[in-house]
Image 1: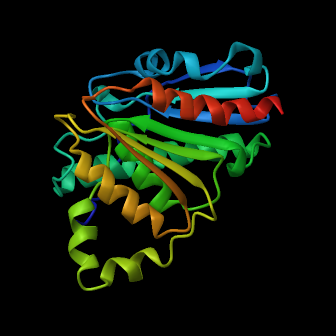
Image 2: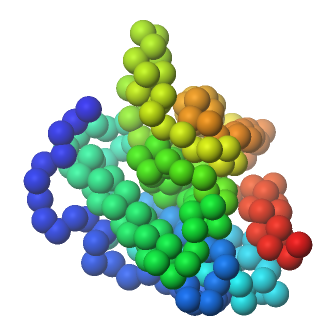
Length: 233
């Protein structure tokens, strides 16, 4: 593992969070949405605009934090440089800060949904391995676990299984979606990511979409919409 250099402040610590729906003080559930490289909070909200019915927003707090300089980490996903590690460390800390603020308002993690697209999906995947718990649901769209190659190599000698043995997602459902024509996230990465997360006590739903590129497709939106729809029952 690449050492994280001591720097201050953490990346992403001073950016804004876009909020929709109910306030944390009045909501019963929350969703944290993480945008991709080059995007911003409005971009992920637009991409998922039809997955959060207006009729349920009186009980749902939707948060979309912004990455510093529109990027959660500067290099490619497979890059293990200290710079990438430091930015990912900051991204994970930022998500945890959002969740702890929700918890302080009375929303438990089991009522918090977390997910993202592209780089945001990679951050979500890394986050749940760093802060395992039972969440409402986690979606990883066109992304993969940062450091995935390391997990795969360690699996050959069972080291990854030992490392993941301490990670328990307590039956959290995790959705992993990716197109087989995605030029930025190979579908094989999604397969491997689903395999890694399945070793952590999560219930994983992996779907690879024929002919789909680096986009969020309707089926992925339908999965998230079905989770949100549970609030109506």
